[in-house]
Image 1: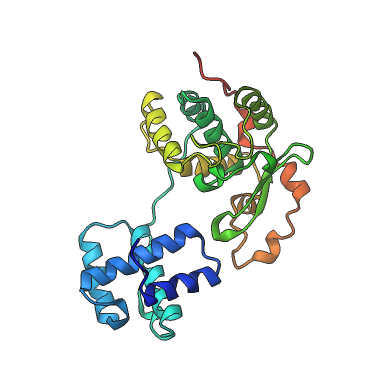
Image 2 (image 1 turned 180 degrees about the vertical axis):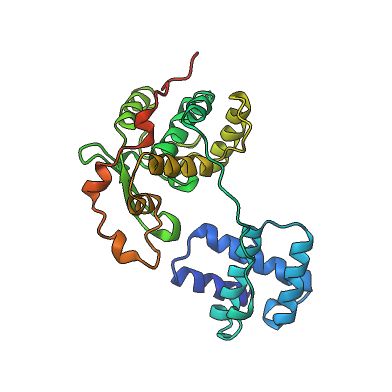
Length: 286
């Protein structure tokens, strides 16, 4: 393995001190290294004009705006924290997000989609994602011990931003998970990978979404995040308070944080998951 340069080592240390996730650290290091390769010089010898030229280059390649903004975050961190140039980060512009409506599945489409997933483990994982409005990374990161049937909640550890939160445990999801546990006997990770000591890879969920969408003949792009959008939309359509939905989604870091802290675990438990309004077949046929 090649030895780390002092500059890269310092950046990694800076990110570690600030408790950035391993995935974020890898992304930031990759972005700065790509910037350096494009300009042909060490990144600490590059200035704002070089950053601008790199951004123009990335846009010309058709990069998505989330990927472009991830690069901006990396460069702002590198210049502002690792190099200590406090005046530079604010001058590195973010891309403006396009105003598009999220894809949302109807209740019937959710049932068709989930029942088109042939693997038991993957079907239950995606059902859990919909029932609790979880991100893909949060779904695969669940442990058996995170399912608190006595309190009627699911504990989500290290969600976006490294924050923990509690979401409702759907009555139907608990029934489904009990069937799954009797059949699969997971230990430790709720959805283990081929190596039982590691969780299932998120790419498995992404691949299952593509296959199930085609098998269910759904003419929409369906991802784990689509299930999350559908969860929120179905709650809203059923009259759930928007403040509760934001807390369930882990959006309680907004400017009005004080309002959301008043949403108690008891209120979360009493919120009906949209899954409880559906009739999902637990075990795939065959």
